[in-house]
Image (cartoon, rainbow over all chains, first blue to last red; front, top):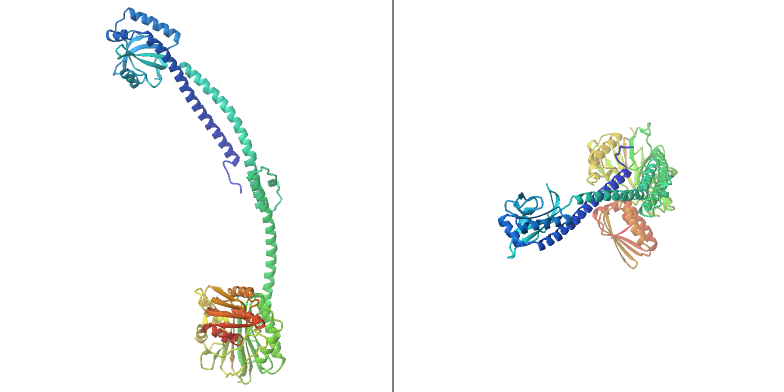
Length: 527
Length: 99
């Protein structure tokens, strides 16, 4: 069952925590250094402005205006140089210079500590800001930070105005920021080290926490469930040791409760299944016994040439409530029974056994040959102890085989079909008595009939006429007559096979709901 | 499919049955009768909308008849031609009071 997996839940959690920690570290360092850088730039720049303001206060602005015209040194210029060099030395400024910017992005120096008056140089700082400062006489908003051939610098720039208020030049105090880079590097290095240390500790603690409270319990539960799934035995108590006091513990408890219940459930299912198998085995035996009760060896009376008889019973469930019977009361009298117990299954089958036995025993008891009397007596006997409300419809006939005359009683059963010698099958319709066991004290009617050689009759149960196809249509008595008449001179066995085949053709794949029972009797008479 | 509508007025119970009363639906009717029949002296089955009745359905009506024989009267009314024919064939027309 073990499929190759790249990472378990431990690995995934560890990678997650590590990635999170690294991202945090990088973010912290980046934001820290950016803030640090900005602050330091501001401080350096502001210090430059302090110096620039002091210088601006001391210089003669009109003289500077004059130098921008003449580009010639004089006495005052030399004093100014001396002063500016002095300031530069003590203010720790990298460069101090005064110049005029031009639109071609160059600057012409009035004074520059590194060159001479009139020297021209391309402007390294953002030109637009300088030009705005020069034309509008305002201080630039940015710190003019830049890397140039003179180093990593920030400029503090102030416009120089003459006595009329015109801007004549710009004064720059540049501060070297090489130092800031080293400081920033040290800052970042320290921060990374500290952050890494702190985050490693966090990582470790978090890992231990997640491991103990989430991952270990999950792995325990996983192992427990795997084991349970394989063995279905509730003996692994490791899951009960989970004591996280949260949802994980609830989960573990629920799982162990569920496993205990499944074990119980399996046990009861095993018991039920065993019970079912036993009942099923017994039902099979019962079916066999029931089948054996119906006469099933044909021809049943090989020596008797006066008649041909054939009967079948196809049960719907294991045991059913339909039955047929035929027996000789004496040499000349044959009794025929076709019956259907209301209901199905074991109750109907038990009732059927009782009814069949009582009818046969009662019929053999005397020589009155009266179906009505037999049914009346059987009815009273069953009703004396019948609390189930089951009843049985019975067609019972007793025929004198020498004359073909007989008596029949129909206790709520289907109309028999009769075919005279050269005629067709048709139903013999008359008013029926109630079913046997329906009510105590019922009087059953009987009527005489006479068969001539060549006459045939066919009796059946409602399983035939009520066979149902997939469209919920009933087979019905018209189809039955048609099937009987399709080969009306067939022998008893063939006739029943024809009807059964026609029913099968009609219902097709639909399940059989009721027992299908049929009996055919052909009378030949004494020859 | 079986629909059972019952109306009870004092000791009079009328049960109207619609659909098919066969092996699968008969237990429903049996339950209704078992719940309601105590103390009933006049029981009427209205079978106007009953399409079909099988032997299992007849058994339920028969057991009601047996109970009502002890405690009052039972009447079966409005049966259709088909149902009436079933009562005739099965001989139950001799047992039930059919109106």
